[in-house]
Length: 152
Image (tube, rainbow, N blue to C red; front, side, top):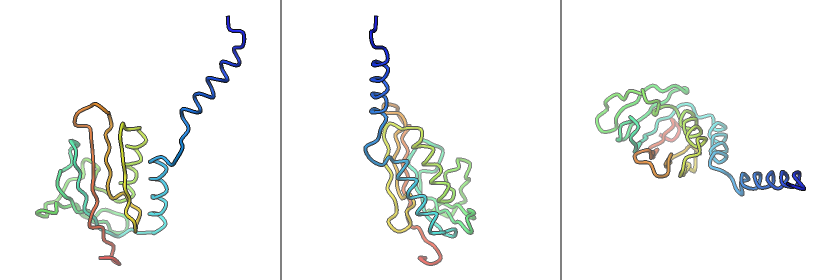
């Protein structure tokens, strides 16, 4: 029936490659570039405040995270100093935030955006809608008050 099956296979292969190619940097590529910038700074002692907005088990209120020599030493609610359990894994180091975002972005959410701190290159805000028409699957976070012993 098909006189030139190899031509059809070739055309299909070209179509698949054209559909999967990217015309610019993807969010994952940009995340990786900023991770390399963060890593190159060698910052391992710092604090920051993060606030999530989601139905994800995290408090929807600002949490201060303190990191010394790459290890989280404290997680407290900004409002009253109460200790926050990190059972959700959402209040870790900046490298752990990069890892979390890489996993989320790698799952190809319906919509997503990430912005980065101009000085230290860590993600300072993001928004993710994992499933386009689903309810309550969105997640956003805002990182503020980043301080190192030198900037504190």
